[in-house]
Amino acid sequence: MNIFTGHTRITGIGLVVCLLISLSSCGGGTERPDSQINPDITDIMAIPETEDPLSDNLPGADYEGTDLVILTAAEQWQHFYVSEQTGEVVDDAVYARNTTVEERFNVKLDYRIFNGYSAGLDSVRTALSGSVLGGGGDYDLMAGSVSYVTLRVADNLLSDLKSLPYIDPGRPWWHTYVNDELELFGKLYLAAGYWGMMSVSWAVVTFFNKQIVADYNLESPYETVDGGRWTVENLFEMTRMVTADLNGDGIYDERDTIGLLSTWDYMATLVSSMGYSYSRRDAEGGVTLTGADQRIIKINDFLYNMYKSDGFLDGYDLKPVVDVYSDMRNAFAANHALFMIHRLEFSEKSELREMEQYGILPTPKFDEAQEEYITPVISEVAGIPFVVRDKDMSAMILEALNAETYRRVLPAYYDIALMRKYSRDDDSNVMLDLIFENTYCDFCYMFMNAAGLDIYYAIGKTENYAS
Image (cartoon, rainbow, N blue to C red; front, top):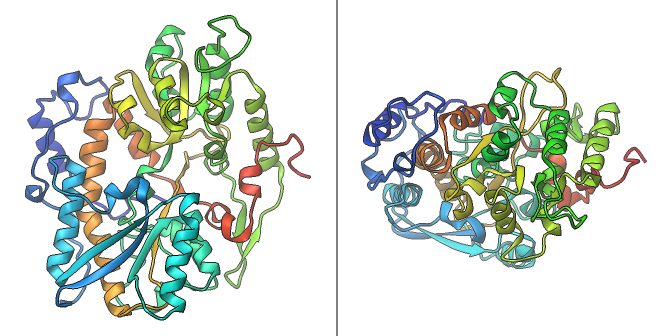
């Protein structure tokens, strides 16, 4: 599923940016010098919306300055929800989105920020259950990372979005590839749309180190992808070619040259990129597990052998200096790893912002017979609590926030920040479009906490996976 289906890329803005930074070509494959990176776009309000003429078709409404309270389990990525005008293109787009919705419906968006990871599970449950079971309707909307907040579906704390007015999951600002997986017996208690920009920034991608490619005279990874040869076997072979114990201590770590840096939880998402789904739908709309076929057994063998090899370094095994993710990015930027598989958001961080010699690729295919590259996505979702002050208001604002994010924040992030500030060459931009042509979020990932589906993260942990 292409998450940009129905989204007209803002080619007009792209051309303006190209002119502003004096690029000789917008579509070539050449590297951009330092002076052509990080364009300064200072007034997002002056940037036109996308050329897509679609309207959200919402009626006019005046909620008389009501504080619309949003339980936002997204402390670690709250900049996609609430921001001031800073001159940064994404911050200003988020501010413009919020301001536009507030002025249109005469509401005040009141984001109540909670920890978005495991540390926030208890506080989110307590806040939401107190709001619903106590009957107070303290929260009008909620949002968070999908595998954590599906727990609240099991608690019966959320409304069926398909039963509410104004919500239209078929519009382009909703991610149907996620929502089709989230639907349970015809009901949709949580849904993913562009308001949750993590569904874009947390796509799982492969970063590669251009300096190591050059040092070992390897084939350009871009050409490997273009030729349909970017497979897990190709990945494994290249990691073996470059892995070296530089200090001769017999231990392969971040001080040596490692083939692949990642973490076991993100490596588990490669199951999706290799074309396997843990579940399937039955005729009644229920979900059954697929079971262990030859494909998943071979995938397990690959991951098991990769974990056991000297060429793989799990970020969770690093000796902490700052934090796991920052330490991984530092090792990659210091030319100690050929590949790093993790979320696209890494490109926004300072370690990679200061690094010139890297490129971005899709995650690898199972084999060359697999026709398409598939991108696993760590999705973000939103819902409406079962008890709220005004369900029509909640539904209308949720639809408006998704539509306005699609019109303002998506182009600011994807077409300007990502392609002109975070990526390092035009070939990576071509890869980014390829990355988002086929995206997937597995049911078992989304509901693993709610249903105890440990099979998702068990992959590669044991040699005999079928047992």
